[in-house]
Length: 277
Ligand SMILES: *[C@@H]1O[C@H](CO)[C@@H](O)[C@H](O)[C@H]1NC(C)=O
Ligand SMILES: *[C@@H]1O[C@H](CO)[C@@H](O)[C@H](O)[C@H]1NC(C)=O
Ligand SMILES: *[C@@H]1O[C@H](CO)[C@@H](O)[C@H](O)[C@H]1NC(C)=O
Ligand SMILES: *[C@@H]1O[C@H](CO)[C@@H](O)[C@H](O)[C@H]1NC(C)=O
Image (tube, rainbow, N blue to C red; front, side, top):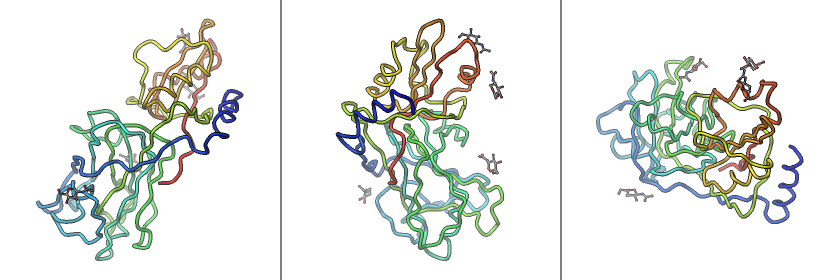
């Protein structure tokens, strides 16, 4: 953490230990899934508040086709949320709980995901490879880093999964989000690294903000409803500031980090260190 981070920490902690308000995203939003095991299967049944773990097609839980090579379930939350994690209520009947392995949760703001699903469009929240039992219910997916977005996906990667465990089904998902309170600036951490992808949560349109200090950049991020990360650099004696909604930033930004004409390149995370849902 840099000096500014320490100052912000000192500003924040005496007031409140966690400057965020956690809440559950409302239920009965619109969902879709890659394939169906039976025609009555309904992707909306896992977002209706019914946590019952006995699969009854068209009544409880949802189930992808047994020969789906890359099963997924996708929710349109209707607006952008800052996501901290999810609880997934597993199927508990017929020894099926163990199938919820090699499965992940990801988030994106990119509407392309709704018409043309791809895992590559998602900012990863968390991926689990353990083989759960009924005793592990609900399965917790706490995002490694907070991420904002409108679409949330649950998916399975069948690579290396034994035949008996390939089925993809679950019964309910509770999604945890938080609001930022910009009057209470949160601890920031300088990120040692970041991930780059072509679809990344860049919030700053075209030209970067020109700011006088890193503090000013963090204040801009803090007061933006969906900003979680900020990147600054000094070039030609000007301090530039970009705002991001996710830890993934565009691949084009990689060159900023090892360019000797740039100075003071920092990727700052606001609202890091999530509490478990
Ligand atoms: C979701 O919709 C179903 C069907 O209308 C209803 O029975 C259920 O109570 C709703 N769930 C929540 C959490 O509002
Ligand atoms: C699935 O997992 C394999 C092995 O870990 C990996 O190589 C592959 O990229 C993954 N597929 C996707 C779509 O993420
Ligand atoms: C930046 O450095 C990394 C690691 O040394 C290297 O792989 C990458 O090609 C470099 N990028 C540029 C644009 O120089
Ligand atoms: C390094 O940054 C300077 C100033 O922004 C830019 O003109 C130059 O193209 C960059 N070089 C690379 C290799 O990205």
